[in-house]
Amino acid sequence: MVRHMRRNGIVTVAELAREVGASRRTVLRDLGALRDAGFVIDSEPGRGGGLQLDPRSVQATARLSVSEIFALLISVASVRAAGGLPFSGLADAGLAKIEQALPSEKVRDLRLFLDCLYVGRLAPEVDISDMGEMDPELLPAFEPAFLQRMRLRFRYRDAKGAVTCRDVEPQAMLILPPLWYLVAWDPSRDGFRHFRMDRISAPESVAGPPFRRRRVTFKDDVQPVRPR
Amino acid sequence: MVRHMRRNGIVTVAELAREVGASRRTVLRDLGALRDAGFVIDSEPGRGGGLQLDPRSVQATARLSVSEIFALLISVASVRAAGGLPFSGLADAGLAKIEQALPSEKVRDLRLFLDCLYVGRLAPEVDISDMGEMDPELLPAFEPAFLQRMRLRFRYRDAKGAVTCRDVEPQAMLILPPLWYLVAWDPSRDGFRHFRMDRISAPESVAGPPFRRRRVTFKDDVQPVRPR
DNA sequence: GGAATGGTGCCAGTTTCTGGCACCATTGGA
DNA sequence: TCCAATGGTGCCAGAAACTGGCACCATTCC
View 1 (cartoon, each protein chain N blue to C red):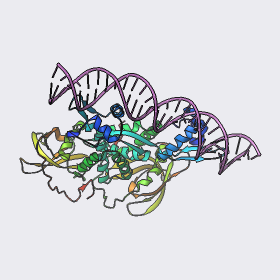
View 2 (cartoon, rainbow over the protein chains, first blue to last red):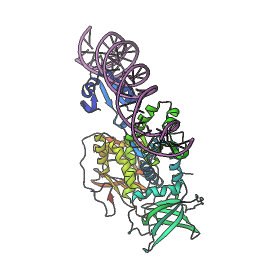
View 3 (cartoon, chains in turn cyan, purple, orange, red):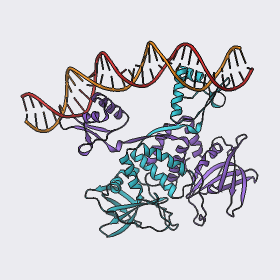
View 4 (cartoon, rainbow over the protein chains, first blue to last red):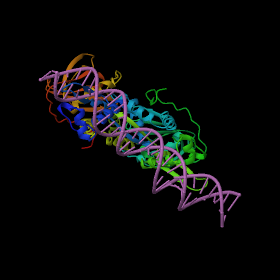
């Protein structure tokens, strides 16, 4: 809207009206609406006065799908939990606004998933030279596992390259940047196992009654993404 | 809008109209607008039919300030550059939508700043036991430094606790999770210096002509956030 | 004092939205 | 085979919202 600028970003109502092809009255009305919407527009009355938009108040409106919000939320949460200085507070504020715009049941789903997220620091001796890419399109397959507690089946390639088929109960997601792990109860082995996400392929939900949550404990330096 | 649900999330136009207090005609018009806006609403004609919203198409609309978008962008970029598996692709898509909604000059500003961002892995021998918090409200003070190349003045507390006042030319931001560093040319010392962000306080822009960009080189394992 | 500026209240005209109506296509049951 | 229940479209008059002009006020600078 504010395209034509005079000295230093200052513009008059008359110039704006001429530019947008609307009347002075309408421009003033629209300015009021913009101010109501949170834009900070300073005005200086009198000869030589004018309007000036505070650039810090410029806002964008975007329509995001739930999956995209999911991904943003996890990114920000992992940065924050890993000690993400110095802007994570602002990022949190942005996400809070996005959350407010979501239907309440979707917010509950996001919270359920965040409760399963943990972040820590990777031990320096771990070899990540073979780190692979994971197709982000696989994300939807993980949602039922954490939201409806449906068992998850996938193929897993272990450190030696051997590929096995797993059928597990996902309990937590562990982020040790740059690696992500799925922490799950493996009924066939009657114990917890962790799986590097970049070694998982062809994940799919398995029909059946929801499994039960189990208490997962980590070392002291692993923190939940959502503080308890 | 869709609150009252029948079997399995299926609802009829008549029920929606009764609920929202609008006419059947208006509800059908609004459904068309929602479909135009990208919502996937399946419909089944005939007796026993109805409407069903595909939950995957649920989108949120949020108004974010430039600072918040800035912070989200940096968070996602740092996760991706640090090998952020497995959802960074989706997060990128979300940020692209937010970017589209921004005025073009703001997008240019964000890109200028991203060009100064680098990510690597922290050497394991670095002691981070004294890591402090940084006030996210300080972020605006950094924007002129990277966008208009204005010199930055701040107080810095070094590893021994000694506090000095610095007056530097910011050249890059280096993220070594969980630490962030400001990489700057220090004219009074005629050389590059790096400053841990959590040890910076009271940053402020210094008036004057823009300083010139200098070539910053990092070790091989430090990557630019935006690929060259 | 006068001109240039932002700001407000009022009112008629214009535009857009709404709701009712008729009607069509499809589906399942009587 | 027919009928009721469903989504969907076109049309039109009335309602609601928006627009633009006008008068007027307060402030500032020349």
